[in-house]
Image (cartoon, rainbow, N blue to C red; front, side):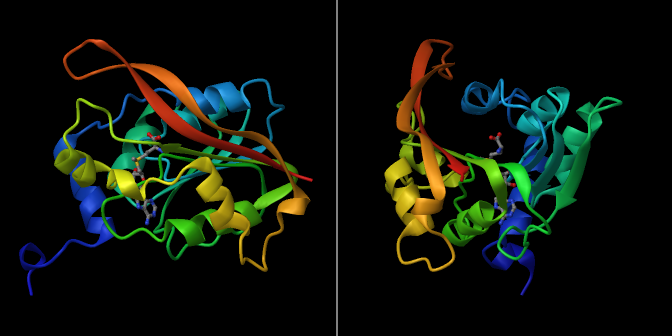
Length: 219
Ligand SMILES: C[S@@+](CC[C@H](N)C(=O)[O-])C[C@H]1O[C@@H](n2cnc3c(N)ncnc32)[C@H](O)[C@@H]1O
């Protein structure tokens, strides 16, 4: 069967999106990461589903030693091209469904790790928590809904269906309920909420998005 006759794999889907679409995201740090991590003493950081590296580049420029992982080499290449001397970033092309963090990190972040194709997100997030060093931070940021200016089909194509977007409380349950590998009592919940973020709609008008933000510290 040729690739045109079957559903693309996650690797094919994302690589083609970046190859066909060119630069896809703003290249800027996500507001939630900047707000939640700005001011934290830098150390080692793992950015899961880093895309074109907006977060990884910001972390590196704020002193972090960053490992940025994404399934799409084309996305990582855009980030690497923006890297400046002194930015300490290791770009790793890998499917997080199969990739296991090789060590622990002072910060593990997953911002908008959504996909309309196969993505074992729950297991990836559990592994993300396991990869946080004692005293380190876990930051999980997700969309809480589809913006009004994006039609539902397009949203499903680009991210995931609105009903599949978990709230921060649901992410907490994914991490700790019925999971013998992790215990909530070993963590301090620092942020758990739906937080508004100003943005610009496709017609140029001012708009608001709501991010689901979960930040935990491993005790
Ligand atoms: C919505 S984008 C978010 C990118 C970036 N974190 C940001 O906030 O701009 C989701 C990213 O997850 C990546 N991704 C999807 N499935 C993946 C997987 N199985 N393993 C690794 N990365 C994956 C995609 O390539 C894409 O770059």
